[in-house]
Image 1 (cartoon, rainbow, N blue to C red):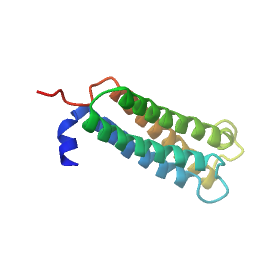
Image 2: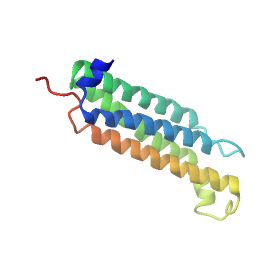
Image 3: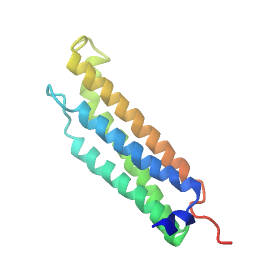
Image 4: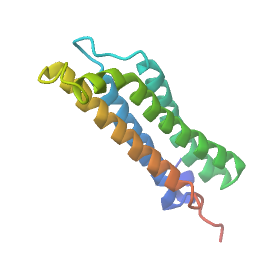
Length: 148
């Protein structure tokens, strides 16, 4: 394992960071759906996509260290980026009713559980966007060190 970490470039750590950020966003998403009936039916999809993004981040570091940059690494990078982008989409779709009642009408204004679900949903979306940008940006760099 240590040998693989010696072969990867510092840019490949962007994917490890993206995986950690996806985990944080998944926890925020789960907390935003807890209690008071403000859950969303898309939460299992968000959790599965988040776990997939975490696994893909680890796989990118492993594959780039073992085999270098190539088609497989590129496919893994695209898959991780798409997983985090689809998490953003699923969170927006799942929280749209809470956003509508809290932000765009005064139906739930002042009701603490609804405002909490709305604010945590927004925080989760923002953190997933950060993970998406980091993983997309990481795809522009060489992930394996050049052999000397």
